[in-house]
Amino acid sequence: MVRTPLLESPSLNERLGGRILVKPEMLQRTGSFKFRGACNRILQLTPTERRGGVVAWSSGNHALAISAVCARLGIPAHIVMPESAPQMKIEGARRYGAKVRLYDRATESREEIGAGIAEAEGGIIVPPYDDFDVMAGQGTVGLEIMEQCREMGLVPDSVLSSASGGGLVAGIATAVRTLSPETEVYSIEPAGFDDLARSLACGKRVENTGGMSTLCDSLMASTPGVLTFPVNQALLADGLVVNDTEIRVGMAGCFEHFKLVAEPGGAAPLAAMLSGKLDLRGKTTVAVLSGGNVDPAVYSGIL
Amino acid sequence: MVRTPLLESPSLNERLGGRILVKPEMLQRTGSFKFRGACNRILQLTPTERRGGVVAWSSGNHALAISAVCARLGIPAHIVMPESAPQMKIEGARRYGAKVRLYDRATESREEIGAGIAEAEGGIIVPPYDDFDVMAGQGTVGLEIMEQCREMGLVPDSVLSSASGGGLVAGIATAVRTLSPETEVYSIEPAGFDDLARSLACGKRVENTGGMSTLCDSLMASTPGVLTFPVNQALLADGLVVNDTEIRVGMAGCFEHFKLVAEPGGAAPLAAMLSGKLDLRGKTTVAVLSGGNVDPAVYSGIL
Image 1: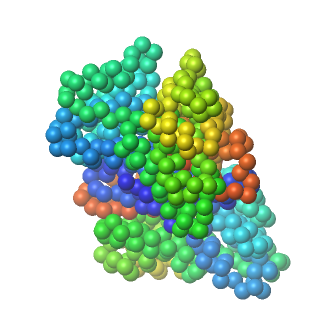
Image 2: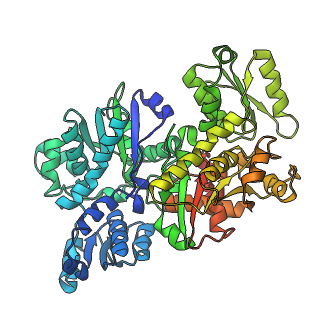
Image 3: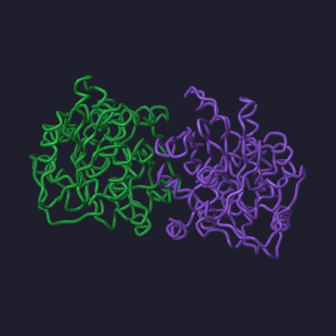
């Protein structure tokens, strides 16, 4: 696992009037934070469980992480991915030796397909977020943030993280608010896929209305997780929402200020900051950039 | 200063058949290693010297570094830059408050213009490479590489760094070969601007023949430095050369394997590795990615 650095850009600080630190998880193995949770869960499989292999569904980053961890440990991996996933994510999982089953988001259920494979193969399902070991693994992002801030003599006023099923932000919030209860943690979601923000607002898990599109292929979960939501409900300050135009500005900001390749979902927290969703003046804010797995042609088009 | 991490990509390792570590200096302040040398030199100015300000010439990265350090310390900065420098480098220096004087590479001498400004303003010239304090500052890249390798239980077989005037590779070679005499250090230059490789081959400082172009705006020095060449002559294993096609592949490799934005010159060591200039099989090789300051339109075109 890479202990990703905490990076700072004087030009961005000046522009936003506060101290902004970014945690670049595109530098993590497999190009996203998902490697952390996959590692933590898979390392706990018994020898018997390992033999049956791992079954997972994912729009891409969890797929890459599971495939890489399984390849390293010599465990068979079966991944269910949407046909519309970025080509580089599908090919990446196959390159690690995973068996990839593509499905149609509109007409098929990935959970059903995954359950079928698990039964046929005797495999263990590793869900992308609704699993305490996965959430704890993602939470190491938060542990590292707090360690690195302490080394710099800082306590962050707030930490921003993208949310799909909510595993990353739940793990981060648990670590950060245990070590610093006064620090606020915010989730960021794409417009039309703001199920967590709306669920936080109304106090119960609600679904996306559907029929919307987003650049953020990695942030399309339709509803907050059963296990993640109570954690997020207890610990998050609020849920913020960004649209595709703001995402593009966030990706360009990662390029300009940090020389980092962010995938659309990976740029969501920077998008929220650059579009003024929070008052950052005079404050210390940490933005988690969750991943950088994006097709070169798509990236060039957005830049 | 950022202690940039040492990153690794299993997919790249597999492709090249060895262990490849990259030192991403695009994550350094101002987007390149130049911040290290500029800091080390400018921090040693006396209060009287500081008042007269700093004069420097640069195709861009040294300009950004000098401007940023001077801005931080409240020292006036005068920078002589070619009209053909990337727009983001010229604007970046101005944004830090430097006075930028543009010149024509074909008809004017940057050294003469700089000397004139220094005399008129009573300023101190901080050269881009021919200065022991600047070289020592760049050498901290090599110190960090050796520290980080030691933490990982590794001794690198070779270290690759781009070269323009040769200050970075001289600093790195001094640090690396002091701590590990058996490690080989290679310089990488663009075709047509391989003055260091040819000088190493014939044992004396020779100039580029001229009339060539390169994507690598940051690697266009016409001759090895007076101070840097003897160091490089004593310490380098060899000088390698890459063409523009190989540079493009190197930039795409930084994107694909590391999610890092490399400017053309910054990708030169990865370009050399991906085009098979060295046998890397079974070896541990460190590639210094020197910077990431590239205009978005240029970058998109190359991807």
